[in-house]
Amino acid sequence: MKTDTRESYKERILRVLVHIQGHLDGALALEELAAVACFSPYHFGSPPKKLLT
Image 1 (spheres, rainbow, N blue to C red):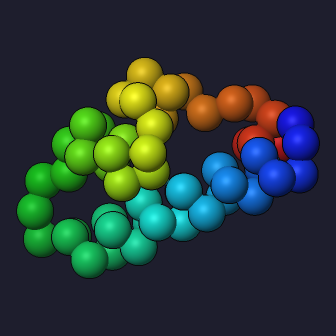
Image 2 (cartoon, rainbow, N blue to C red; image 1 turned 180 degrees about the vertical axis):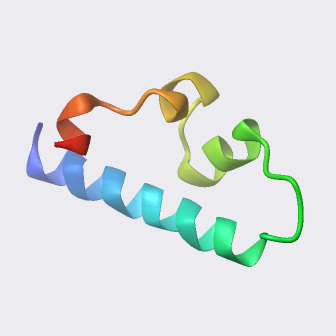
Image 3 (cartoon, helix red, strand yellow; image 1 turned 45 degrees about the horizontal axis):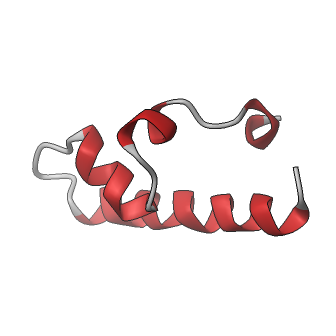
């Protein structure tokens, strides 16, 4: 995975984590979190394995 791509994914996931922290008192839908990360729900639900290693 390219360094720029990896950094972009990290930034997107960080935005999701910040969003979750700010909305702990309510339900969080996959579609909502995917939108925060600018991913489709499918791609948000299955991040690339290279990002997780």
